[in-house]
Image: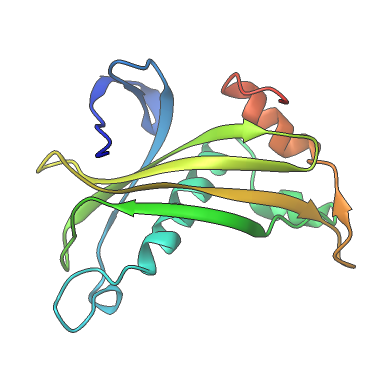
Length: 160
């Protein structure tokens, strides 16, 4: 089923409120690089995962924190699962927005939700999510770190 995404309200610092759900999303804008396209001139599908990271990193920075700050405590957050649904395509040099928000928080894993959209055309391109866990340098699973728990708390997402 095709997802709809309409913005009800623009807030400060790159945040928007989704119409119908009232969910708050963080928005990052960027232009499609030539290197991101395939031979047919459209964005190669794997690059949307990079766009998800642009959204996630922007959300963390907008919260006054950074992924680097998390890593400096000895915690790493690999992706352990992901899903993407493609609704349309993007072309070279288009101005796109990636919207990101915390989705779910459990004792040792958490997830973010994403929407990639061409706002000027009001066209949804891709939506999906990533699931992460926390590990130390020895790859031992750890509880979700306090910085990430704080970010999720800011969005009203509490431990399930």
